[in-house]
Length: 619
Image: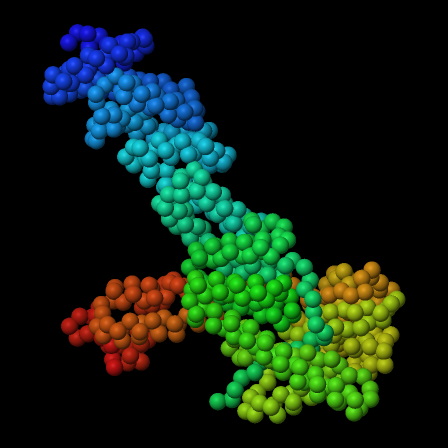
């Protein structure tokens, strides 16, 4: 068959010099050979044809690779494969994609399979550069070609996940990002959005890419212990709307009641806020310490509800519903209880307001408009030992009136006042009358300088008081008082003057009313000078408290499993307990082991007499 051999040589000859061939003639010859016998065709033509093609593409691919960038090489390969498909369909009776060892497979292996690692790692134009430069079309082409060869898709999946992991580590381990919770979360959301875009547009939404990038995000989010706190802070920022929310009247304090016995850019519309919150919850899903997030979210929600800083109650409830869908009813039960308390407090406030109006009609004189939220112990993250300090006489009178009113209606309950959670609207006369919203502690201090005030420190307008005298008169701790005085004398709103004029507050410093105070706004809000995130000491205290709370949860999971199984070996019990708890946190194996020993000591479990690593449930 010299004619066919000559044609084959001119198609992909050993010297790889291209010549025009008569495709009709070649088609006639190959089809005649095929009709003579398929075995003869396969042995005498198809086999040597594949060998020649393999040599040709081995040579050409190497030359292409040395002369071109990765994207250019892939474009040439894409064109070559189209040409090969067209030639085979025009000239040969062969099945181009016919199973193992097909013409298609030989061409793809030589052009892509042998060079996939080199292409991915190609300096300056490989996969990392394409991802860095958002070259979606080139990435799409790479995925399309790599998915044709064995191991190509898996290689891309692993390298894309690695790229995601490395970028994520840069974000969470950056000291600049760690110092700014909003920046930290914004950059993570941008990375998440970017990776989702790659998966959808370049990798055809392939589930394997999604799963592997999600595993990368899980590792990223759990590299830094403060990720739960920062995600909650970011959500808090947007639930407050980034603007001052309207406040209704003066808030003197809160009482805890118990029975005895887009990317984080500028967000404007509610729809944009909801979209950002949903993205934040995507990050939440990757946290292994969801109970830490719950703790912080509860703290931030409490402040929004107590200070009326929430932009939208409807949005708040939507977030809780999303959390309930993700983690179940138990995760959000206390959060929903907080909303119930706020609704109940409105009814209580209305009845007490009617009593105040009646009292005002009966007795002439000034009355303080006190608004109170009654909170259920256990729902709210109030401190175990709330600091007690002295309220001004006029405020204390109304506080006592409310306490008598409430306890008369709810026999057997006890009120524990959380004054630090409250705020007050104070009218202050300087160059003009200002209405200032401030924390309760600020009001307590400022009232010592009120006109005609006497107080324990001998205050009143024009009085000069030292820090030590103010501490004695108010009952505030020195550390708390220093923060208050910094806000009153050293912030943008200098209602008091301080001597000496240093940046630190000392016990011997003297304070007077700043008669020169002026402000362009008639109404404004003050706050305690404090960071938006916990200090290292506070964070360690929160972590210790969470660790303490986890012990009973591990105990309960062990008992549930053993009560169901009756007998179980150590390894199986560890796996099952971890599985039950991972929706809230991932327990350390050492912690589970300690709790098992504790339950054995309390006779909930016992070791089997036949094997020391087998436990039996004690009914």
